[in-house]
Image 1 (spheres, rainbow, N blue to C red):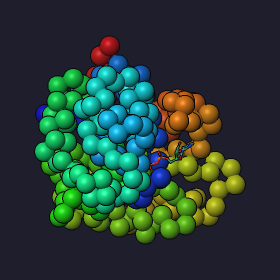
Image 2: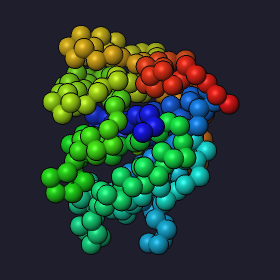
Image 3: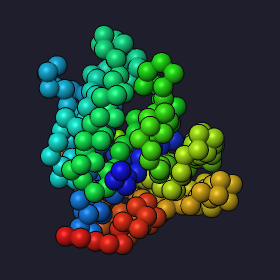
Image 4: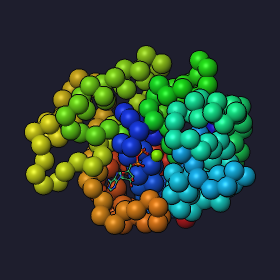
Length: 244
Ligand SMILES: Nc1ncnc2c1ncn2[C@@H]1O[C@H](COP(=O)(O)OP(=O)(O)O)[C@@H](O)[C@H]1O
Ligand SMILES: [Mg+2]
């Protein structure tokens, strides 16, 4: 089993793809052969035979990865929860297929970054949620959250759902935190969330200028991620042994 991390979030659009890409860029910079995976993607585009996931494309660019079919094994067109999108498209989410792709990818890379879909309780099929996939993959998680008003509730609910399922929560990353004119909530929430949950806070990412997912543009994401996020706490001992 190769080491890896599952990047989940308190919600959709919270910054899981940006954090996953930032981590891939940071690990590549350390000489680590890093693979990325988006096990289930909805809202995909392109012709039916070659549906493309924007998240997977951006992650593959960040990791300079080569195996699109393994990286993004399950793709659906409708921008809905996977079980609903699959039903509308007269398909099913193929969990054994995802786990096979995951094991294959482990043969090609030394560390895997897996981006979730929505949050922990997004259904992939009947009685099977993103949380079940994380358990089946055997990965620790990082939670991406906003830091503004509402973040305490969203983050603690996610931590709770993870802890009662015996997941290892490596930490929380706050995304799109204001660096000037921050609100009182943004200023105080990280410490409150740490104190109440006991989960490490790994850092906060500001708005990254020049970052455009559609164009595969990262702006200064690599540098900013390394300046502001405790990368070693995500990867464990792996990052301490860079190999080129
Ligand atoms: N720190 C950031 N700086 C600039 N743009 C960001 C940042 N975080 C997220 N975005 C943008 O916000 C949108 C949602 O982020 P994304 O990472 O795709 O969220 P998720 O993967 O959780 O759905 C994307 O268009 C992304 O480019
Ligand atoms: Mg995403």
